[in-house]
Length: 84
Image (cartoon, rainbow, N blue to C red; front, side):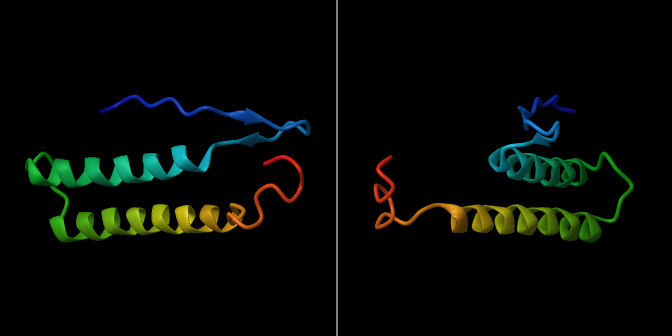
């Protein structure tokens, strides 16, 4: 199993944030690992169920990506606040 380190960002109120790109990559790696395990017959899990779960993780990662893209300023908006 791979070891992964995820950078954390501390908020002033004590909360922690994880970059969305790290979360989506982790979800995709997890699903791919499950599929690989089933493909190599290293598990007694039912392959169809594993594939469905891996696909669900990928769909969640895609949804997070889409939501994050929605927060990005459009090219028209960049520079309007004097910073871009």
